[in-house]
Image (tube, rainbow, N blue to C red; front, side):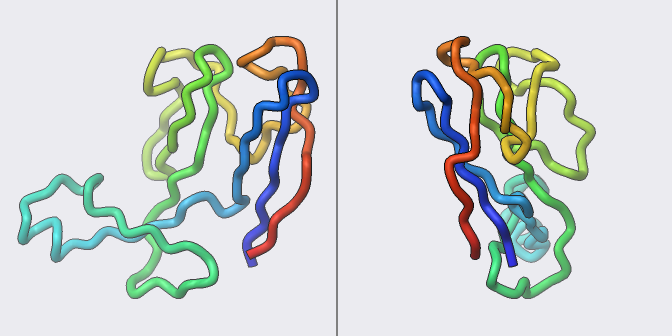
Length: 118
């Protein structure tokens, strides 16, 4: 069972949602070989409650840059520690936003606004 959480800024009401299991994936090797695509373009996401056809190989975890506000995924197979847009090291797993200062307004903090279950 996957658990999601919705965060909302206490001042500007900016909304961010995240799931505890991120975006698990496996690589479609057949498509990669036949179409000559790079490995990163052949990810097949396996969202709960669906069972994967192949073993899960990695997980793309949604992150938020606290400097520029860019939302992006960090692949569990890579050791990314900086934002893909501005290269700041101030990145946070979206599931861990509770209590963090909002990037957009710099006045409020993110608070849990509810949970989701899948």
